[in-house]
Image (cartoon, rainbow, N blue to C red; front, top):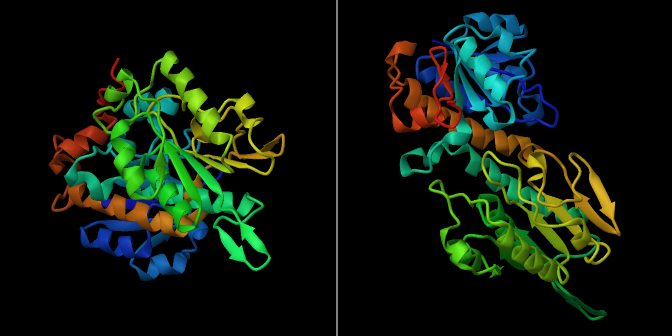
Amino acid sequence: MKLAVLSEKREYEKRVAATPETVQKIISLGLEVFVESGAGDGAQITDKRYEESGAIIFSDQSDLKDIDIIIKVQRPIKEIECINLKRNSILIGLLDPFSDIEQINQYAKNHITAISLEFVPRITRAQSMDVLSSQSNLAGYKSVLEAANEYGKAMPMMMTAAGTIAPAKVFVLGAGVAGLQAIATAKRLGAIVYATDVRPNVKEQVESLGGKFVMVETSESIDSETSGGYAKEMSKEYQNKQEDLVKETLSKCDIAICTALIPGKKAPILIKKETVTTMKPGSVIIDLAVEQGGNCEASKFGEINIQNGVKVIGKANFPSLIASDASYLYSKNILNFLDLLIKGKKSYAEIDWEDEIIKSTTLTKDGEVVHSEFIK
């Protein structure tokens, strides 16, 4: 079978789905590997390094008509990339299925087997394939560094003969993978860290990292987690109480890191525009949820919006800001998935489509939409 690594065509994307190291291991699985010229440029990987690892460089995507498996970071652009995929080829990546339902139907119509890694189940056997966790971890780390860079003061307490500088106070909204890494990073930089989440069971994790946990405690918060470990969408009454808590906590903080996401839905609004105006001038808000609408009403996708002296940073795709490490982790996730999918298999027909992980991530197969989330 033949596998192709495509360059990313979407704006703000510098990651690549394979590194020279993983290319060598993919070849050892019995695949012939093709890499699109320039695919690794954003992650500082040259075509020459791919060639040295055993890959064949190609420059014309019409060559994809002979490719069995295509790996990407983000979903392909319909008008440019999907037209070149051959019948019964396998497309693997972060396909962002909820953003474009029509594209899923197109995969099915063209008999493309689309595998969306957002749906990797949170089970022990799948941990090494958990793309969302690996990328969110880096996003949480980078968000704090970005905040520290934009914040006009020092993060840790500094005691000098001339006087003492107070430590920055950081408020992390959402204590998932990205939020927990943001807490750990801010704490390492010497900040005082507060964190909130609708799930009470994350309190211990927050406190183990040195954060102070604050939350709205109601009977609703007891059952606030999905079976996949994500936060549920809360009632309007709960959201109003949470808004008051956020406003009170933000009034004494210098930096806010927003990380709250609900799979398949618009990001919940946690910081209203009027709340931003209550923050001290010079404060910074980093909104990691801006691509799903944002946790802060003042966020603008891809921009820094200054409101009453508060910097609201809506930069897109934080993992791509550290593309080399993000690509390294992503490519390892892909390799582990490929190992499950095709190791020891010689054809499409030999793949175990009933395996729990493969079945959970498959959107379309044999000309039909097969994922339960999208079957009408």
